[in-house]
Image (tube, rainbow, N blue to C red; front, side):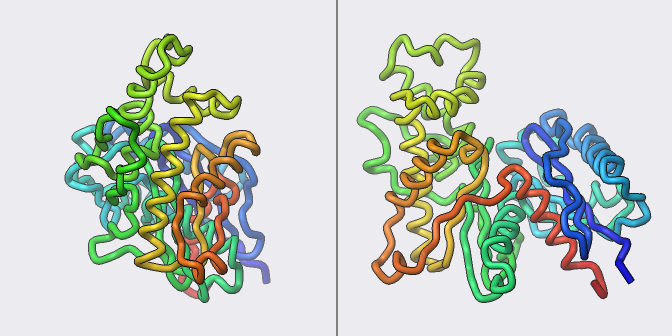
Length: 340
């Protein structure tokens, strides 16, 4: 007899909530983005209602009755505890003070009146990429993923399972310090991250890193550039990718620094974990094929592996890109359903 229950995956981001539905036999019931504004900058109360709206929308879109949902997988930008409590210092996406120390998972569980399984967005995307890449062999491999977005998400998978750590904050690779010597140009200031660190990977390899650190510097080296004429640095930062796709010299300098930072981060991962695969995801791989292949090649070029590691390592793009977080969240929720 065919099973008639599902789990829902909810990917909460800095600008949008993306939702999906996973059936235990039919697989994912949507093959596209289904999203609504996340409104996280307006604080927890507004954002929780936005989550509920995304949940209701995906059920409407798929024709699933609410009583068919066994569990909900939720992911959000970190850092947060394993139980889904946002860091007491907030984060890039959770800058509103109402988020500091907020029990995000618990609040969504109460609002939806369903069991909620929490992972940060990097972990969710990493889990999805790992299982798509290795399939039935997932338990025999390890992988590291970085997801370039507003911040820099990441995830570490060992033997097919997410490594969460004692406080649930393992895999926050965006806040690992990477060597800046040879990455920064002469006179380029040490980049500052919203988490309070200087010189971590996210301070370079993220949209906020472009807006706050890279673009202000490079505009001084390319006076009169069209991006410098935009209304705000935030607007200009979002446009950098389109210039990079066209081969613009300044944009390629910016993305070259991002690729170097990620490569150095993967080099660190190679020495503490020696994974089978390195995955790259996020907005940068939503770009035109030629650009994303150039960027992935630049990341690989800046990842220094021993000969033995290089022979077996795989460098891949996270599949299904912007849908990966919601799908990984759903996979994590599926694992918790009794008797599945």
